[in-house]
Image 1 (cartoon, one colour):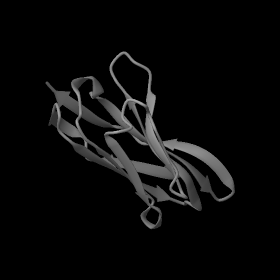
Image 2 (cartoon, helix red, strand yellow):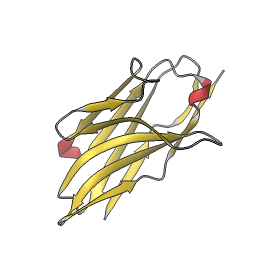
Image 3 (cartoon, helix red, strand yellow):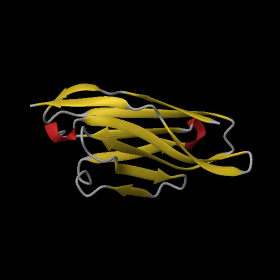
Image 4 (tube, one colour):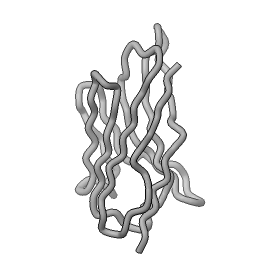
Length: 119
């Protein structure tokens, strides 16, 4: 199994920045893709950004110019640097990955970290 541990959430003022980290551990053979999702109160969970092992990235249109996702493959860790945060981006941010454990590819989720943007 794979365990994802997020860190870096908290309270930030509108216009501020935040850096989230997510470290994966367990019997991991390879992590194909790591990413971040968020879920605001009363809304569906949505993809914010993800990155493949090779470094290809995908961003939600709403964050493209303000967010950078990076990863350290040797540490099985992904980072999420987001700038100019707005109150409507208050949400629980979840780390997600597709990983190969032994010979099976599965999807895993972290428990989430709260990000609150005050106006």
